[in-house]
Amino acid sequence: MIDLRSDTVTLPSDEMRDAARDADVGDDVYGEDPTVNDLETQAAEVLGMEAALFVPSGTMGNQIAARTHTERGQELLCEEESHIYKWEVAGLAQHAEVQPRIIAGDDRGVITPEQVRQGYVETDLHRPGTGLLTLENTHNSKGGTAISPAAITAAADTAHDLDVPVHLDGARLFNAAAALETPVADIVEPVDSVMCCLSKGLGAPVGSILAGSAEFIEAATRVRKLFGGGMRQAGLIAAPGLCALENRNRLAEDNERAERLAAALDNIAGLTAHEPETNIVLIETDTPAAAFLDACEDEGVRGVPFDDHVVRFCTHWDIDDGDIETAVDAVERAVA
Ligand SMILES: *Cc1c(COP(=O)(O)O)cnc(C)c1O
Image (cartoon, rainbow, N blue to C red; front, side):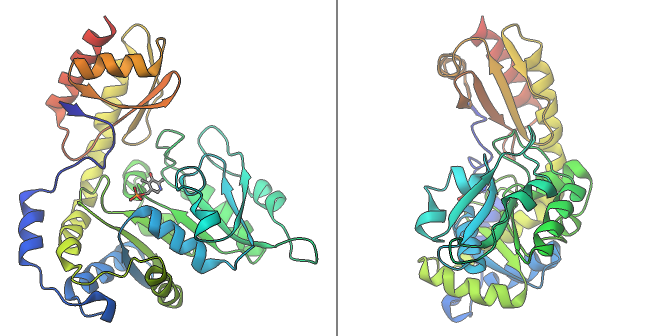
C-alpha cells in the first residue's frame, strides 16, 4: 500500500529508534531532561528565535500560542481556511478563550495588510480588542502553498503597527523554506512566535516546536502545563525529534516528487491536478472524491478527501521515486 494520505504517516527510522533508546533523560517538568533541552536549543537556533518549547503536537503548540499571546475574550484574526480555526476542534474558543475573526484570504491563503487593518478591532466599552494575528505557512487547506517572506512581513508589520502580536502556524514551515529557497529564520523573522511540526515532513514520531522570545516561552511553558502538556522523561521522544531536525534539508525532494506526481496525474482523463508548491497535491476528480479514493485503495494507493470532488495526496519521507511511478500506475487503473 502506498500511503499518500498525509506526511504524518511516516514510521520512525532505525536511527530514530536507536536515538530514543540511547537518549539521556530526566524530568522535563523540572527542566532536567538534557535531550529535550538540546532539542529546544537547536530548534531555537535554526528558527532564529530566542527560545523554544517542545510540545506534544502542533495543535497544542498553536493553542498554547493563542492562549499565551491573548487575554480571555479578545479577538484573534485568522484566515478562513486556517488550521487553527478550522481543524482544532474550536480550541480557540475552548482553550484560548478568544473569539476568532476570520479573513478570507486569496486562493493561496494570503491575507493583505488592508484586510488586517479592516479586521482589527479596538478595545472600548463595546468591543473586545484584537489580541493576535495568526498566519499559516505552508497553507494546508489551500494545497500547501508556500507564502513568501514579503507577504508574511507585510501582514505582520501591519499587525505590529496596531500593537497586535503575530503567531505563525508553520506546521510545514520547512517545506515552505525548501520551496522558497529561503532559510526558515528569514521567513519567521517578522513574527513573534512560530509553531513547526517535527512529526510531518521531518519524520519524527511525535512532537512539535513552539518558538519565540525568552519571555514568551517562559509564559508558554506555564500554559503547556495548564493544558496537560508537561512531560517527564520526554527525551525519549525528543531524541527522534533531533534526528528529524537533521532531515530539514531533505524536504526539497518531497516537493519535487509532489510536482512529478501532480504532472502525471493531470495527464489522466477525469483528473485535474493543481500545480503543487510543496509536498501537497490537490486533485479535482470528475467522479465523487469518495468513490475515486475507494477505487484507488483497491489498487493500492491511499489519499484523503478534501472536498466533494477534491482529494489530497501528500509526499513524505517514506515515499521514493519508485513509489511515485507505482502510485501513478495504480491511479490510472483506478480511473479506468
Ligand atoms: C497538522 C497541522 C497542525 C497540527 O499538528 P498536529 O501535530 O497534527 O496537532 C497545525 N497546523 C497545520 C497547518 C497543520 O497542517
